[in-house]
Length: 184
Image 1 (cartoon, rainbow, N blue to C red):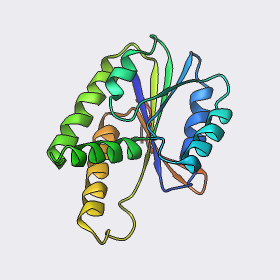
Image 2: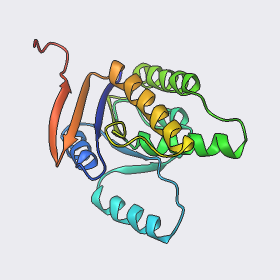
Image 3: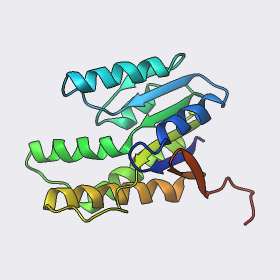
């Protein structure tokens, strides 16, 4: 049974670096599951730089089907998914392109199924990186508010099943949910 570690925080808070360093300290073959779409040359350059930071990591690029990507990873591996924020964006973009929309209930169901799939897998640990977008201004448009709401539901769903949850502020991790066995 895999363990889920959720790492959240604002943009450039240090969450990806923290997740990568923490995952690096766990024994096992390493897999980086990237959800970032290749949309322009600037993003291609970012992807290239990030790959250089992950020496020794196997990279899988998957924008939508995270369960299928998880299935392709050998047992007892360590997985870092970076990031859920882009995954939700990709799901929303895909739904809009198909003119089918995406509801909060659908995201809750999708995240619950993915979480169960991860927990039932033979992977050792899965680090999930996500942005906390609910602490700022209310977006001025309907699409922005929908995205914020969908990501909030995604984050809550994974936080509820994670064995550990960290919130990063200025590169400093704050433990929100300790490992089992720690009494508060």
